[in-house]
Image (cartoon, rainbow over all chains, first blue to last red):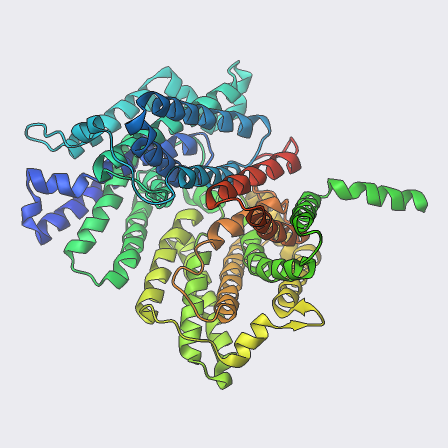
Length: 313
Length: 320
């Protein structure tokens, strides 16, 4: 699947879903409606980008959800009450992410397990910070998240910004090319004189940065936090990356696709509530939409990948 | 003769499952030191009972993970819930329906396994996403079927699942039997060699004439069947099925496999380690509990221990 086709599927699935939503609820086709539809998509998009950074270097991060929850708890407590300490904690957690990346590479550990362990650690820290839901969003984040730019709602602007900036960083810059190369062939990168440990630590640090942004944005929208606020982000973010045309191996990822994938997943929830579907089937229908979109992917990727797909799954 | 026996003993710490059992023993005695040795039997029997749930789902997850990178079954919790709710509603407390109920639970597992496999095979969805999306469907099905009602299991079944035989909890006996069967299948049967070959090099396995797709299908079905069986047992054990009863087993099933020393890169499995990991997961939590740590510290320590064990046990040279 080359770059051109990779982006087609997420664009198509988002368009179809958006058209369906507008058909069911024409009033959604407005400034206010779009804002409502995509508001909660901003933190999901950021978390998906964080996951993409890890998948880019052939790993997978099972701790994204608890990490975003932890950041949300820090934001609603320390960042609000004592901003300096709050910033220090968030910086330290980004360093922790980098350290995990280095550890995984140096000891050749399976990322899926180490991040699984970290998901317990972040979850525990979050529970220590906020044993019961509460806290308050710092005023400046509220202002940023509720700003009303002319013509296009904030959520859409934010998503375009996220997609554009990460596209420049990952697809256009030399650092991004190197990082993707680690996923493609780490040995070749090492042989040509780069430190794979540093690069992997860098990719994990980037994931930490976007995880922090996701948590901060989430609190800006919800105004308070609790320790389980973002647990489902782990699975959503993995699904978003794959929906956006990314692959689990080979450094083949697409930042723009990942953001579109996250938007599609967020929109699927709104679509189902407009359908007036019985609540029993809400989760199931989300699964069905996921399967449907991925089934369409088959049409785009049928040629030339017959053997590869069967081998790596 | 003596020399070879000595080297066998010396080789034990190098076995991948050694660390899980060693750490379990440490956690066990650390808990007992608090009570000066009282309650040791109760703790052991509780550990053996609860570890059997994790061990059975862990064995299923192990088969899948042995298939190689990217193969993980995320639908285990939903399959457990679906099998538990469906079979308990079907039995409706009637002792005569215990065996048909079990058959229904296993049928749910077979169905879920086939569905998972078809998504992976026909739609070429990566297994992680395929089992994840499928689990949403199973979860919805369980919600719709059960409507939050908690139906009690037949009394005989509840007695059986909480009872014990010659001091050993019945569930432990079942768990150990399944582990033995899995060991025989993996280490002594042709199919087990096929699974390992699939995980080590799928292309080579295919070219040497192994029916790789059959291997993959059977593996995913086995995982789902073990999950549904655990759901049936767990629902009977805890006096009814709950919609969130499988949730914690998602992480546990993966953790148990890895702590037990299987290679997450596939092609290398380890049955005794599954039981070691399952015991460890329970004993660590009960140790931290008895030392009076809160939920937060307990979670942090559990995570730190998982990472420490993996860092200690998996030496260098593993290609992940």
